[in-house]
View: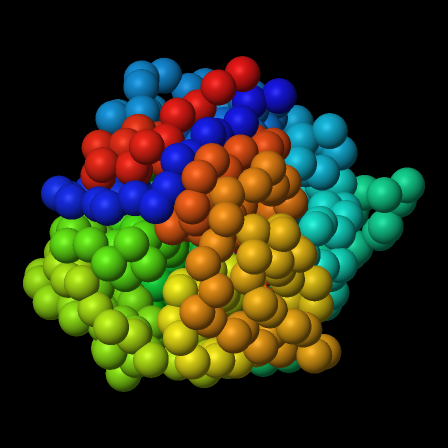
Length: 415
Ligand code: EPZ
């Protein structure tokens, strides 16, 4: 099983360009199923989750040509509507093919995604709102079997601003008859990017970027070209790498306002950051304690929580980081403690007492963002850190070892 060997402490310099956003391209790849003409997507990141979604699309009969710089998807000959367990179980976002398949073909059979390391992650909001649009939902042997005589637009209010539910329902509404109003939508930039993609393909969505999306159903979507936004979570990870190693680096290729809350939190704690149009310049900073509560956008993103805990281990005073979105998203904590961090958990809060020098150790990845936290800790720890099960990292970080090595880190990937 591949692992990363990191020798710390590291000093970083230079600049790193982040990839296009995984969490934008995953729903966009599901949205491709709505299009009757070829869709070309630009600069798709080479990630395990993206490859899983591509396999799922090919299993449905989608023809995929080209390479990651320009990949074309032809959905004119989809020959069946079942997304099987073997693929869905490895990547929950696959559930987002349910809405597109159902609204275009009046039937979809998608394996229940099951839980994952960070929580049970139910899909009750997805299913209840599809029923309101006219779907008949049966749960059969671990599969969601949805059928309809044709979805009909209506007014919906999401019980929680779920990212995936907003995306699934939005895509279902695009080809539904009549108007659908979706209230309490998720505001994440990746949701906005999906809506912009769908409109580029001929959908009629208004209210983009607000909590209320209004969709005028259309007969069909055409096709065209699209490139997703830069990955703000990847960007946050590298900004934190710069802060933890007290380095001067530039992180580019994303929209800084998509990280406004995070950047403001960092600056309030003493981080010296220069925000440019599509980049953030990080300078050596003496930071004070950081208290954070994760929340739906525009609040502090849960996907940066683990990396913030790693950052807090390098700050003298104590910090409190509270996770409000997922019920089990502290699996990086015991591994960080093994490296000498002083972190105690009280319910959904992690109290991080900084100031200890971390010491390199063999550590194990458990989920995508926990893995990123371990790599960040390895950059500052004294000695060698061996990060095992790096396939978790490959789900969401394109060429991580190469990008960090180009910034000056002593990191290599070994079998
Ligand atoms: C998306 O997951 C992201 N994944 C996650 O990123 C991210 O952590 C999450 O949004 C929150 O920002 C992708 O975009 C592919 P949710 P999603 O539905 O859509 C509850 C990463 O590291 N909920 O907003 O699954 C749910 O249990 C990944 O890149 C219901 O109760 O997140 C959770 O507690 C991890 N019922 C909360 O809402 C539902 O029907 C937020 O989930 C749906 C969700």
